[in-house]
Amino acid sequence: QVQLVESGGGVVQPGRSLRLSCAASGFTFSRSAMHWVRQAPGKGLHWVALISYDGSNTYYADSVKGRFTISRDNFKNTLYLQMSSLRAEDTAIYYCAREKGLPSRPERFFDYWGQGTLVTVSS
Amino acid sequence: SYVLTQPPSVSVAPGKTASLTCGGNNIESYSVHWYQQRPGQAPVLVISDDSDRPSGIPERFSGSNSGNTATLTISGVEAGDEADYYCQVWDSFGDPWVFGGGTKLTVL
Image (cartoon, rainbow over all chains, first blue to last red; front, side, top):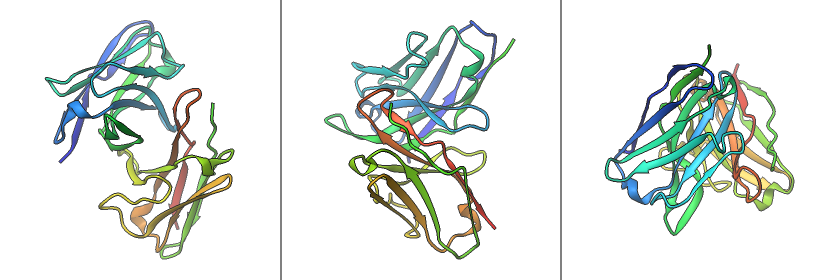
């Protein structure tokens, strides 16, 4: 069965960096576009970033553009999110999510989610 | 960027029908997807492309989309349906993957 397991969250000071990982299993990782979606405490869901199946294309929410970098290692079946210049408003649970569809036909929604990893930005 | 509006809360008695709305300008021209998030858990897809139900989702969950409103309908509501529900669309302008603010469904 599809499993997505995030790790790397923790408490970090404003302005510092942190890298999140998402280990994928149970499906052909190299054929799926992957995303990061975050949820601030007690708030709703917000899309953060997308990476195409082969890593050739990436897109970012305006709120993180220039500070976050999404990447993937299709040999290790792992998705990453490198976060830098962190701010208090980046405090959230970060979920990795699989986009339904094929490389040639993405479906623009998320059919599987990980359990999330909490990032707290605080001095 | 595109805005999706959901009522913050909806309450329904067990066994009754809950209608959760998601408003957006001409939303009928978008494919709307719905996620259920139980307390302390990750979101789960319950409806895709307006009205398609993924395998494993009970038939009690259905969706529709017309005009400026998409609706998630849960019939025969059970205590286990108590959760936050989010609608989502993909838009070619601004941040592409857009979520509504979510509706907390309370089973009385």
